[in-house]
Image 1 (tube, rainbow, N blue to C red):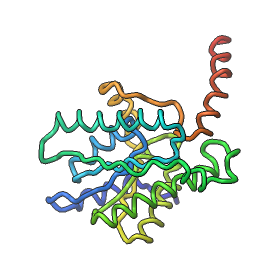
Image 2: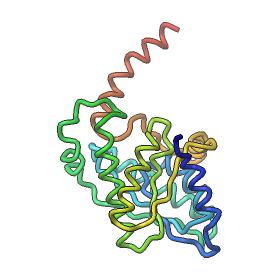
Image 3: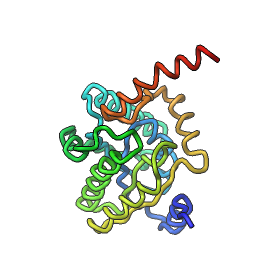
Length: 219
């Protein structure tokens, strides 16, 4: 029987003390973080950890960082001062990503290449969470319908064991989480990329576009 990570998270949230615990939230981008921040800020004092060396092109990386910071600033402006969301930007070193996925460059998006990419980002998040004395860590990645929530939670669990810091299980796409993230992205007029981030996912997306345009023309 498959695990229900959303239900597991809800049970943890129900048993949290009144005084807010500290959560280090790995974010892949502003749109994906929008719903997660709206949902979890009522339970945690959140620091967003923006660590995505998989975004191969620096201009794309900078665009996404700016949007992440803008979203947080707007959410802070509309919320209570004592519930301020913080942000921490990790090192941007794409060579870390290329080193980890060496030999898997030809894999399709969503395939074997994604596992070491997830490991790179989640293990670093867990390390930073442990060093910073955070009570929990988790990632926004599970909100995407294209991401394997089981794999993400398994990797995070291993990182949790290694660094001895609690992982908050998640499948944020559940309960219309992804739908809400789309709504919030429109409200905040966020830049929404159409590929994951690495140069390989971008190339795959560019190959798909002509086929999609042809299908639209013939329908």
